[in-house]
Image (cartoon, rainbow, N blue to C red; front, side, top):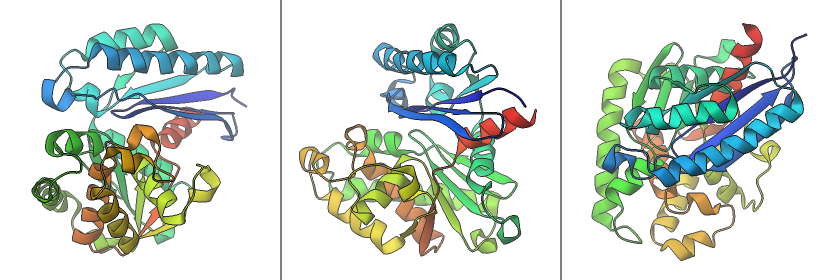
Length: 300
């Protein structure tokens, strides 16, 4: 049996780690909100402070990998790094910290890995599934072997449109219009989304919506994984939070501090997908790109 392997995702909003043993059992799973993509949509550069925050998180993850005796490891960098002119500064520094250079993967590969992780525990005969992965800088939609990556995410939409607190109606409408426009192009790649009867939602926006909907105040993976989130619940949460300023949103149980200023963008994407693709429910998955990466490491 192979020893422990590790997967690291350097995302736009968060930096995450998964360590599994040779049988695939989880040994450690961590997430830190590092906001690596802060300002990238506007400046096309990773800010020094954002790089430092991410490297600090990676330092913690490197120590955890050493303690657990991780040999093979894979790290990926996604939307923020793809869009940043100075990405090499981060990639080289990250390699020095964790011993492996983060791979700059395409949105399509990101989507394929997310699909593999999200559907691993589901009945293949009930697929293909439509997997929705809402990131900070991009959103991936995957239907079976077809994937599309859209340049919208919770950080990107929030930075681009929400200049007032709470955002104005026109700002929310403009963000929704852009999301709907991009989803129309996704249809050209994916075809009819109702080739599947099930939408699977990944990442922090979906988990946060499920926590607020259920009234949970503390995150526990087992409480959220494969929980069903209804469209009306998402609409209600978005409507409520959109009417609050930052301080009032920060007091909402289940909404962690690092998501307070970007949750509206993520919820808007989630609701628009559910409305425009006519899904009444979304299955919450806490298994995602990390799980897909770890499975590939064990299979190779």
